[in-house]
Image (tube, rainbow, N blue to C red; front, side, top):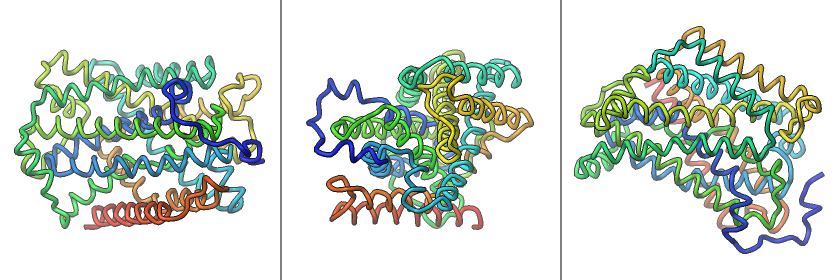
Length: 417
């Protein structure tokens, strides 16, 4: 049954920082996960190949990201159900499985990017891939098994905070303000390679698993309609921070490589580390880069794996809550562990991290019609007064349509151009 029935008469309370402290988490965690290893690599590649020419896109994506995730928060809080369950209820089991197939594709791609990023960080310090993967899988299974939802959320926020080191890296890179302003407004919109990275950056910001995760998280946290104002602020802060981190990586890379001529390329994590860290010194720079990528990849791995295990639980009917211990929800924890183990095994088989990561983000852009289409239609079916309607619905519809069209067009043009 929809949670909305039990919340009749409850209305959003005025925002207060005290309530925000209790509600905050799902938005910040999912946004920190959004700046995952693949996104960091995509931003670094953007700065390496095009200087500051993709910087403006990072800023434009802040309100778009907020608009998308705010709809997710609304759906989870008002309906009290996960995204897959809600699609099944509104559109039937067939469409629910279509949405889950989209999610699985995105989760597999994201998980491989995160684990490959962690393997690359380990390689910076001479740690063999098999040992890195073993430690990562053991740590993440231990976190899930030993803690409640709130515990996992706090651990994820603490790990993700290491991403903020990229702001320090960008500041120390001392970008030339004249070059930054000039190149930010130079848009080579007909260049297929540029369009490919445009699609990659859009896909790096709006990912299918973010919609599924945040909706499930606000449900599992038992947030009510009165918590909507605080949940929106949580989401807005997360959207701003994640894009500042993306912009920082791009700026630092562009500044380090004197970002001018198109065509520069970073093919390994080691090359990206070398490009981002010269102004900090080799030892300090490598350590800060490692902390940033590790924070990004670890929090994203937690979110992606939980999202896949939870969503499959919604459709297959097994208990999928972190509030249950392994004895009460065995399949949830088994699926969670198996996803991690399978991802680690694929990474150990050998993949090109940079090519994989950018390609995954482009795939996310090509999946936008399904993800954003369902999100918009579900928001239009919410009960009053939370339904997406009126002038705002028109604005959101236009933004969603433009994002989908531009993301798909850029991806297809970049691939086939």
